[in-house]
Length: 360
Length: 272
Image (tube, rainbow over all chains, first blue to last red; front, side, top):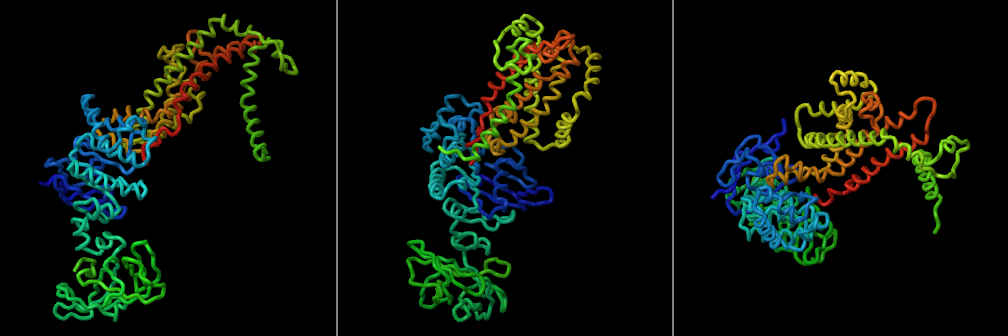
C-alpha cells in the first residue's frame, strides 16, 4: 500500500527552480533515502514533506490524505534536524515531552511515553540534563527520542549524522537501522553520504539538480546504474570511466578502442552491441573493487603511480590516457611506483554508457 | 613572579580608565557626606569628618521621597510597557518576512535620529491640549516612544541569533506562533530583553529634559528635584550630591538584579 506519495512536486524561489518535478511513492514501513550531492534539492524536498517549505506545484499525500498545503503539525510527521534543534533551556525530559504537551496529553501519559522512548534510546540517566551538558551522540539520541515519542506516521531525517565523528556515525547508523526495524515506521532519510544510503535504505532516490536520476534498492543501483551519474555516485571508491569509441561490431561482439585497454582494444559479447553504431563514443565503467591484479587475460595495461595500503586491502592508482584508474585489491601486491600494472575484470562487471551517459 | 612591561602598561592603562570613570561618582558620594565648607574649600579636603546632615535634610523634605516614588512609577511602567510591546514586535521583525518590513525598521531607527529638544515644544503643546500635563501618564508615554526603538533593536538582534531550526522543530511539535514566542523565544532571548530593560529603565530614570518640561508640582521626578535645589542665591552642594547618591541607588540595584539574566551562552547546546 502506498503510504507516501509525491506527485510532480516542484519548488522554485522566484525564477530559480530548485525541484523540477519529483514523483515518487513509498510503501508503509519502508526506509527511503534521498541521496545526492549538495545543492541537489534533497533537503528542500524533505522540508516540503514536513511542511516547513511551501510546495510551488504538485501534490503530496501521506497515508492516503492530501497534505500539500496542510500545517506541519497536522501532517503527523516528525523530523530530526541536522543541527538536532534541541530546546537549550529545557531538560532532556522536557525536550521530549514538548510535542506531547502541545497535544495536551495527560501528564501520566506524557511521562510514560517519554520514559519508554528514553528506555529505547538509553537516555534514562540523562533525563534531567540540559542539552549543553550532553555529548554530540547523546544530543542526537535526544533528537531522535523527541521524534519517536509522538508516534508519528512518518519519520524524517535531515542529514542527522553529519555532525558526528566517524566512529559515532557508524554506531548511530546501526541504531537508526535497529530503530526502523523495531518501530516498523516509514522513514525518509536525507544524506549526501552514499555509505549511509547503501546501508540504511530499502530504497534509494538519487537526486541531481532537482531531478530524480534513479530510484531503486541499494543493490539495484549498484548493479544496474541507469547512468554515469548514479554509477559514479554509488560505490566507493568511485567507478572508473574510460571514454572509448566503437571500433567494430560483429553480431553480439562489440570492440571498443582506447589506448588504456591492453592492446588498445576491448572486445565484449554483449546485447548492447545492437544499440550502438560504428565510431560512436561509449563510456566504459569499471568498479575499482572488480578489477583484479595479474589476471590471466588482462583488460587494462597501465603503469602504477602509487599504492595506498589500507591494511587488509590496497588501493592502487594507475596512470592512463585520460583519467587515472583506481583499483582496490585484497592483500598487499608486491608492486612499486613505475611498475607495469595489468588489471583484469569479469566481462559481466563491465558497464557501458552511451554518449548521453545513459546505460547501454 | 616576573611581570612583563607590556602587562604593566596594560594594568596602568586600565587603572587610569577606572579612576577616570569612577572619580565623578566618588566625588558625588564623598561630597554628600561633607559640610558645605568642606565641599567649597580649596584645595579640596580629602580627609574630613563625615556628616549625615545632608541626608537628614533631604529625607526630611517630602519633595525628595515623593520624587523618587514618581521616578519609580514612571520608569517601571514605561520599561514594562516597552518590553511588553517591544518583544513581540522584535519577534515579528526577526522571524517573518512581510511587506514594508525595512520601512518599519527604518522608522524605528529614525525615531532616535531626532534630537529630543526639537520635539519638546510640540510635545508640551500636545500635553496641554490633552490635559495630560503634570501626570505620570504623559511621562510614561513620551519615554515609551524613546525606549521602544531600543528594545526592538536589541531584542530583534537577540531573537535573530536563535537558530531557525528551533522554531521549525517547535512547529512540527505542534506549537502555535504565540507558544513558540512564549516558550522558545522569550526564555532564550532573556539576555537581550534584560539588557534592553536596563537601558530603558536607566533612560527613564535619568531623563531630565522632558521631566522638566512636562511636570509642575505633582509628578516631579528625582532628577528634576535634584536640580531644583539650584535656586536663589546659594548652591547647596551637599544636598544635591546626597540626592544624586540616593537617585543612583535604585537603578544600580535594578541593574544588578536584571544582570543575572544576562548569562552568555544560553543558546549553547541547541544545535550542533
